[in-house]
Amino acid sequence: MVSAGVGQERWSRIFAQGVKWNFCLTAGTIQARESGETMKKRARRNHSPVFKAKVALAAIKGDRTLAQLSEQFDVHANQITDWKDQLVELAADVFEHGSSGKASAPAVDIKAPHAKIGELTLENDFLEAALGKAGLPSARR
Image (cartoon, rainbow, N blue to C red):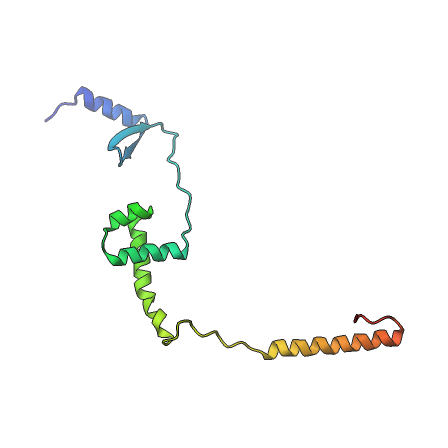
C-alpha cells in the first residue's frame, strides 16, 4: 500500500477548494481556473449553402482527411460528414427533372390575376361615370 504523500494531500486539497481545471489541447498544458470563471462560448455561425457545398465536395473528393478539412474550413468533422451525406443523398434530384439545364417553372394560375384585373377595370369605369355625372373632373389625364 502506498502511503498518502505530500503530493496527494496537496492534490486533494486543491480539488476540495473547487478549483476547475482546463486542459488546453493545442498547447498540451493544464491550467487551473478560478471557481467562478467560465469558458467563453463561440458565437453560433450560419454557413451559406455555397460554403456547405464547397466543403461537402472537398470531402467527397477524398484527397484530404476529415481532420485536414476540419482545420482548413474551421468546421467540426461531424458537420462535414453530415453535409457530405446530404449532398450524396440529394445529388440524384439534380438529374431527375430531365435533361434540360434548368428545372421547369411551376404552372402559374392565371385565372385569379385576370379576375382581379377585370374587377378593378369595372370599378374604375363605374367611378369615372359617377364623377362625370357629379360634374367633377375625371381622374384620367
